[in-house]
Length: 120
Image (cartoon, rainbow, N blue to C red):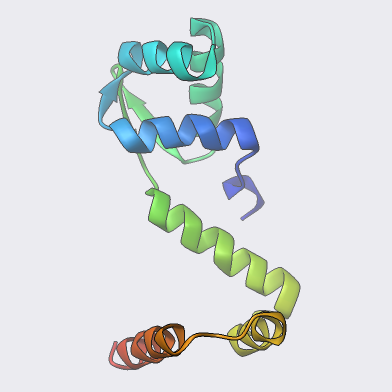
């Protein structure tokens, strides 16, 4: 799981891919130049690194993701709960609600999620 962690700059790069995929590597270079002020070589270096780590694939110059933004967020959330709360979602919710009470709407949303998970 450690390899699935993105640094700040890698996250910005990944967001560009997720927001624009599929895109050509040339389009990615232009977007990274405009948004991150990167040179072509920097874009290709980071792209290669994240392809090797299983985030993206560059197939003949067409860049697409192997893991979606939602999947990434889910993996990171699971990792955080595993590390900080020994994998206990109830312990996480208990810690969260000690400092910030849930609104009625939030409670209902959580109950709806639990009911939906129970039906899977």
